[in-house]
Image 1 (cartoon, rainbow, N blue to C red):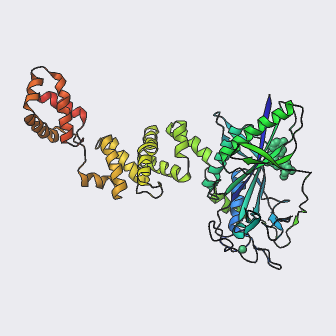
Image 2: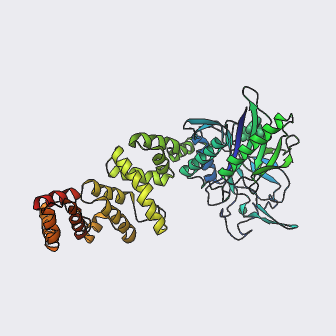
Image 3: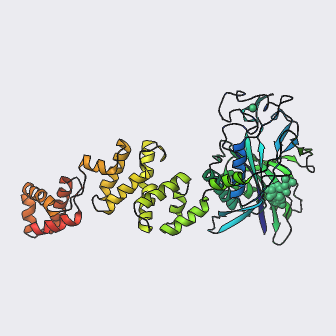
Length: 475
Ligand code: ADP
Ligand code: ZN
Ligand code: MG
């Protein structure tokens, strides 16, 4: 039996308004070659200027990944010729990355928390986009120079499932930090996946690098495919060739792209146009100030505090916004497991349903955490029943008003006293004298009919217990 070994090189586009070394707009979907200038087009004699926000975000990620932060970070030129990079070199960090020797935890699908070591975190720039059409190739340099953060893991992952879970967890992490939307389909997160296999106790095997993977699902499949392919090769006494392979999403296989004949010579040398960056105390304090509770820690805390199920805990920590919403709603509506369960159930059930129905996101919806807490408080106090609560939720979406105000305007408050209910019962009795007589003569099965009539007459606002007891009294 072989063990799978996976190491990742994850790239994320940082959340900056402008590119890494010039003032061009960092926005996708714009007309090709409109967000360009002499710097990112590599004209002779121009000078790069480092984007401070990119640097802050790079350090922030390195810190969140428990890296040793570089006290002096430097940029290097990686020289190569390819039309997607008009300067003929990429500015990256080779000798002094922002962070090294970190680690990060993730929740494995087997239920345990696992740790992946981080080799380094470095800041670099993206290349342009090439579009190959027939015998022509078109270049769009809008993306050239976009700030890109590369996170290199040690080969610590051991299955396709874990690799997928790790990447989803990493995605959540960068979103929580607000440094990237981490969207693989749109290319703001990319991942080169290195896979090898070995027998237990043996040293690491020869790896292949798989590219062209634009979803975590494909990465899982690619790892599983490679494990099988390499096992078949080794079992057939063939050796694994160190190479780069491409994922073919139509056939669910990896295909050889190029074999690595040793390491390419990029002639790395320090970028002479950018001074080293030495973070001072204020810079490091600012980083600390922007660090947030990470998704896994938050999930664990909420799961314990509110005794949530795993599904509930996953759901409410899906985004930082949702987790904040959940905590605000439970905080105002009373803390403890009961409040947590109630709010989680709302969010996963009816709120989700109404969001779909109205085509809204929670962020953009009229339902605030305070309003949800108020709705739950009305329910807890017995002033409304669950059916009315659901109606009120819809009304909040429709009218964008507080639940208390809607309750008054709609007259939906529960009927909880005999004085309120008694005249309604009298009215129902008067309308159905035959039924009342039949019950009095012993046909108790017909009671349900009367209860139904009372509920209808009150629009479902009468407390069922009260209806039953008062009915018995009057009969
Ligand atoms: P290279 O010199 O080919 O770039 P590195 O040692 O720098 O290789 O590692 C690049 C990536 O490959 C890292 O994410 C690392 O974890 C991963 N990796 C290295 N060796 C292996 C291996 N034997 N199996 C799986 N992944 C590996
Ligand atoms: Zn530019
Ligand atoms: Mg390497």
